[in-house]
Length: 169
Image 1 (cartoon, rainbow, N blue to C red):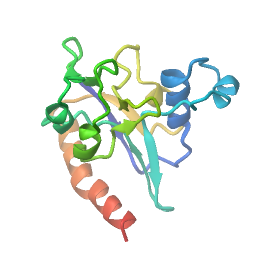
Image 2: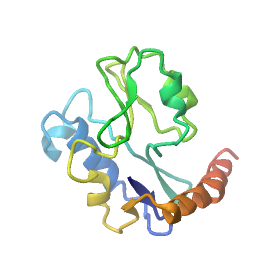
Image 3: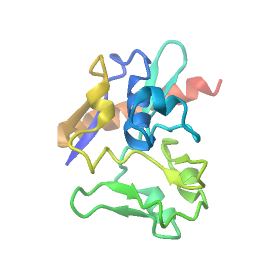
């Protein structure tokens, strides 16, 4: 199974991934100039956070224990049979925000339409648009084997925890 990996050393915080995600995934027009004028404004499913020194793109990590899936009372969050990715069916979402509350990475967003939204790694497309648009290669779409899992765990334990702790000071 493929996953999006983040190389924080390469992320410059340009937010190109956010912009492309918003235009491609939630814009009605799919064009930058027209998307800027849309109401409600298109929202990305990835959020680049920065403390001035380090940048961290935050998107759904497709957790193995899936707290959002188990917290969803309406069954709106499900595992896609074909891709094995955790996705949201916005038709079933009742806007209870349980998924938002339990997500350990703050990767589930609330939309103005009173629906939850999160990164689904563009499973209904050929390739994740955030990865494709990243000018530095900080986002990579890789096979999630044991090595990738080891890197992911190491980063989540070291970088992400330290990053979040640093932001709360």
